[in-house]
Image (cartoon, rainbow, N blue to C red; front, side, top):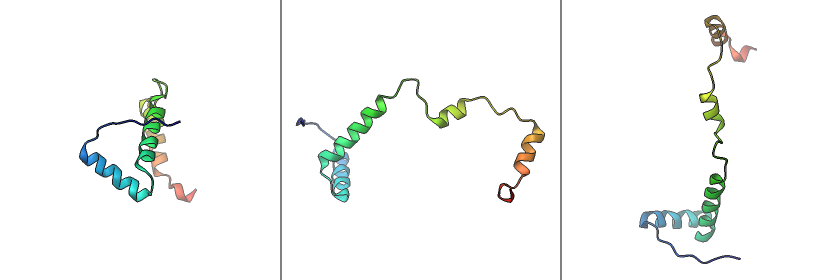
Length: 80
Protein backbone atom coordinates (compact mmCIF):
# COMPACT_ATOMS: atom_id res chain seq x y z
CA UNK A 1 0.00 0.00 0.00
CA UNK A 2 1.35 3.40 -0.89
CA UNK A 3 0.75 6.62 1.03
CA UNK A 4 0.28 9.93 -0.71
CA UNK A 5 2.46 12.67 0.75
CA UNK A 6 2.98 16.36 0.15
CA UNK A 7 6.30 18.12 0.51
CA UNK A 8 8.19 21.17 -0.64
CA UNK A 9 11.51 21.22 -2.51
CA UNK A 10 13.70 24.04 -3.70
CA UNK A 11 12.82 24.80 -7.32
CA UNK A 12 16.29 23.87 -8.62
CA UNK A 13 16.13 20.52 -6.78
CA UNK A 14 12.70 19.81 -8.23
CA UNK A 15 13.83 20.72 -11.75
CA UNK A 16 16.86 18.42 -11.41
CA UNK A 17 14.58 15.67 -10.09
CA UNK A 18 12.20 16.03 -13.04
CA UNK A 19 15.09 15.96 -15.50
CA UNK A 20 16.67 12.88 -13.90
CA UNK A 21 13.34 11.04 -13.87
CA UNK A 22 12.69 11.92 -17.51
CA UNK A 23 16.18 10.83 -18.59
CA UNK A 24 15.73 7.50 -16.79
CA UNK A 25 12.14 7.20 -18.06
CA UNK A 26 10.87 6.65 -14.54
CA UNK A 27 8.17 8.39 -12.57
CA UNK A 28 9.32 11.06 -10.10
CA UNK A 29 7.71 9.06 -7.29
CA UNK A 30 9.92 6.07 -8.11
CA UNK A 31 13.09 8.20 -8.05
CA UNK A 32 12.06 9.63 -4.67
CA UNK A 33 11.18 6.15 -3.36
CA UNK A 34 14.63 4.80 -4.26
CA UNK A 35 16.39 7.85 -2.79
CA UNK A 36 14.50 7.68 0.51
CA UNK A 37 14.97 3.91 0.76
CA UNK A 38 18.72 4.25 0.16
CA UNK A 39 18.90 7.02 2.77
CA UNK A 40 17.06 4.94 5.36
CA UNK A 41 19.16 1.84 4.67
CA UNK A 42 22.29 3.91 5.16
CA UNK A 43 20.94 5.12 8.51
CA UNK A 44 20.33 1.51 9.63
CA UNK A 45 24.04 0.76 9.70
CA UNK A 46 25.47 0.21 13.11
CA UNK A 47 26.69 3.44 14.70
CA UNK A 48 30.20 2.02 15.03
CA UNK A 49 30.31 0.86 11.39
CA UNK A 50 33.18 2.39 9.44
CA UNK A 51 34.07 1.96 5.81
CA UNK A 52 37.06 -0.16 4.85
CA UNK A 53 39.04 2.94 3.89
CA UNK A 54 38.38 4.59 7.26
CA UNK A 55 39.45 1.38 9.05
CA UNK A 56 42.64 1.18 6.97
CA UNK A 57 43.54 4.79 7.60
CA UNK A 58 42.85 4.45 11.33
CA UNK A 59 44.92 1.29 11.71
CA UNK A 60 48.51 1.42 12.97
CA UNK A 61 51.21 1.89 10.37
CA UNK A 62 52.89 -1.15 8.84
CA UNK A 63 55.87 -2.28 10.86
CA UNK A 64 58.49 -2.20 8.08
CA UNK A 65 62.11 -1.30 8.32
CA UNK A 66 63.45 1.32 5.93
CA UNK A 67 65.25 -1.44 4.06
CA UNK A 68 62.08 -3.52 3.66
CA UNK A 69 60.17 -0.49 2.44
CA UNK A 70 62.85 0.42 -0.11
CA UNK A 71 63.03 -3.19 -1.39
CA UNK A 72 59.27 -3.26 -1.83
CA UNK A 73 59.22 0.09 -3.63
CA UNK A 74 62.17 -0.94 -5.86
CA UNK A 75 60.60 -4.25 -6.90
CA UNK A 76 58.90 -4.07 -10.28
CA UNK A 77 55.49 -5.61 -9.70
CA UNK A 78 54.99 -6.50 -13.36
CA UNK A 79 58.24 -8.49 -13.59
CA UNK A 80 57.07 -10.98 -10.97
